[in-house]
Length: 331
Ligand code: KG4
Ligand code: ZN
Image 1 (spheres, rainbow, N blue to C red):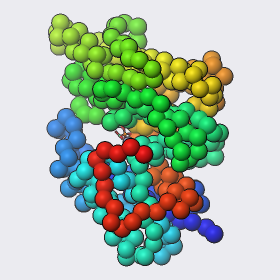
Image 2: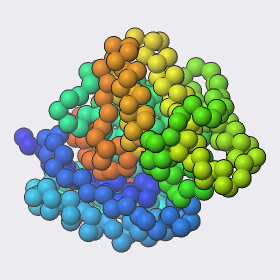
Image 3: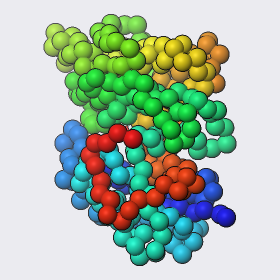
Image 4: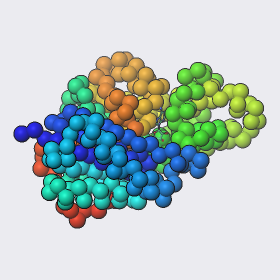
């Protein structure tokens, strides 16, 4: 039997809908919210309001692009956790109403699990077990996947996430939110060995980024605005290289400890060109098979929710209509 799923993602500041048939993503429509830029970060109340405005046109656009009618949909999936509660409520309520109206099953998806499973979109997929370094605005985790629905977190950040390390240091450099993509852009023409910043050491497979942010702050406090403007590319390249070094050191350790050679990266920071290149180079050096989702499936998107829902559908993991979202949740 053919299975078509519509998925909705609204955990932060992207409103997204995707249609997936038999594990193939037919559409992945994403509406970015530009309203937050002038505030230097995501404003939860504004994000919820923008989701309310966007959700119907986004769902309609995803169905149209997939050339699929609502009557052909077999299940409705949505991001249930984690994220901004007001944002999650919009997607959850919309999905529940759709499931009720169409009399079709509902599938609740964990956003971080979905980031990992973005690596299962497309023809080339990792074998099991695989390791995934998930790097986003709110999380930094090393995940061991035994199967699509059996995942274990081996290590995670004890303070800031990698995306926060990019965004907060970018803010110190005077760059607008979100700073990660801009640091990536300026770093491409900078020299990464110009400046040295702190590389906090934490036990096991965990991460810490707050010390790096503080060392950048102390360094910049001693510089003039002209110095920062004249060395922006080298500063971005040096900060980015430090974040990448910290991320990949622990991923290599995880590969050594587990003996796993199927390695993936995922999440918004996996869109970073420097990280993608360094990860692939490290893979070649160590004989790993490396996997990176295409750009549109790295940052928040409903395609990853749809692919996760496809596996949950097959396993019969459906949600009750009384389900509510959660700002924080383990999977
Ligand atoms: O996965 P994501 O879209 O949302 C969360 O689940 O948090 O990740 C957003 C994060 C932000 O911190 C953003 O600055 C970062 O991903 N990001 C990047 C790049 N593109 C997005 N960081 C570095 N380089 C990029 N190219
Ligand atoms: Zn995310």
